[in-house]
Length: 104
Image (cartoon, rainbow, N blue to C red; front, top):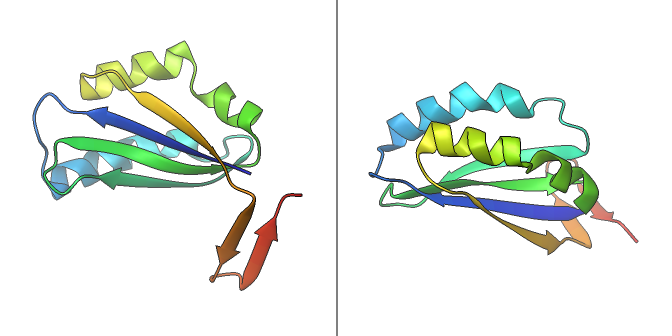
């Protein structure tokens, strides 16, 4: 599995409620995305930076999301350039399903 972390610094800080409304407007875009298990929308405490933490089945499926079209969408929606960091995720402890997931 792969964790992708997206991050973008906003032109002006947003409140938690403003961020929540923006996130709700974009969340449907990620429903049913091939290989995406979960997306967590995140924001820094001062409201100046937002992003997402994604759990993907594979790096290729993650990279299929973060295209030039996706970057243009982020630039238009948030007014800033996104960054994407990929991390290998060999083990996940899932306390909801009470499983330890491993992709060996």
